[in-house]
Image 1 (cartoon, rainbow over the protein chains, first blue to last red):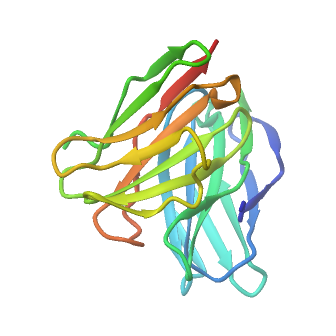
Image 2: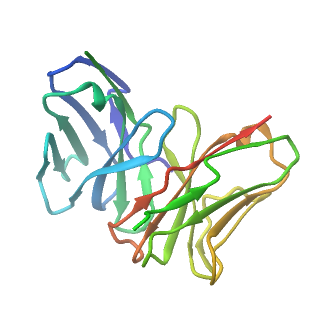
Length: 111
Length: 114
């Protein structure tokens, strides 16, 4: 069953602006991961945040995790045209080992 | 380190034919997972295998689909008598241990059934 739900479904921003997307999930998790997928391509692992972490940074990416609300956010700062892609959150449940993906947020960065 | 290798990248099959998708995990990874992505959707788990064992096939359709991960060679996802609804991107991921966070995905095989 689908675990993560991303919001919004689609986002269009100007180059240089920040992009924020959210993910909600339903069960207890070991970790939550964010992936990027360019059109017609495979998935690229962006960042992983464990259940005992609240915030993590990697370059222009900032991820937060609120386990009490079962939600996470991904912030991309100073966006570039190359950031145009679909972004997926995936959860690694405590009772399972499979990754459960949401339907994704499609981000378009306008030059 | 070549990463997870999937082939072919694109596969076209007529209805009723068989599709065989291959996945070679990363070196040192003994756990393989197959996921399917329908257009405009996220990835859905299909099956989890270790060498010579199917650990969890709860996401596999009951008929026409099978998977194996032999002692030697790549993991194979086999779809018999393909139908139009099987058209999707099929991704393979590998990890060094079960439940570990070191999942690495391949570039996928895009199956088109005509």
